Image 1 (cartoon, rainbow, N blue to C red):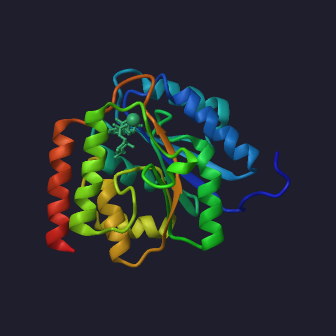
Image 2: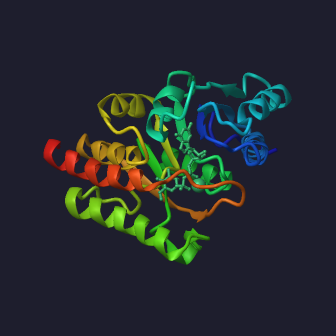
Image 3: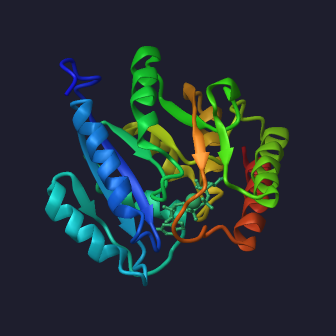
Length: 247
Ligand SMILES: Nc1nc2c(ncn2[C@@H]2O[C@H](COP(=O)(O)OP(=O)(O)O[C@H]3O[C@H](CO)[C@@H](O)[C@H](O)[C@@H]3O)[C@@H](O)[C@H]2O)c(=O)[nH]1
Ligand SMILES: [Mg+2]
């Protein structure tokens, strides 16, 4: 246990899950251990879209182990998309700060203290984990094939070129927000799927939010499969266009 807590604020993690039964126990263990070691006040909101693999049963067991004040299950009836999962989870958050991340260990909780530290030190609205800056720290993507790397780089280049958000990783979804900031931005966002991350960051820049970046390593999942399909890629391109004509 550290003697001086990093912060006295409460942190709410929104963890969207779809078929993450095998990943959930470990990510929850890593999150809870990190928050306890840092003496931070926290809750984890699991937004599960009725996963057929029984993710919700595992979530309920974890709530019994770690306490229902720390693990909150907010299920939905079916697979309704990643963007709307955050909107749904946000309604149940009680912390002053919101952390969004993936449940498949691609986003390691060890980076969260750095994100909190940077937010406090620079009094920022948003801190995002970036895979595309700070390569000397080991930041980057590990485990993706060339096609997936090109899709990710292409998506970032497209939005940088068209929308100029001036951050290095607009599609990444490991972020810390001040709660009022994400609550305001989320009301403006129209995307439902993976494109949500890019839209919210572009809108954040347009409305003058202060944004910091912490380099992160993104390792591809070990268990299960990515839910990113061709329709999400088409949806992304449409999202860039819609923002271009509306902002
Ligand atoms: N509730 C819910 N959760 C979902 C859904 N789709 C995906 N998820 C959850 O969202 C997280 C990310 O999904 P993955 O399928 O693992 O995404 P990825 O292909 O690894 O993509 C990652 O990189 C992208 C950019 O490069 C990111 O845009 C994306 O958010 C994610 O970080 C996982 O926890 C997954 O269970 C959905 O429709 N509903
Ligand atoms: Mg993943």
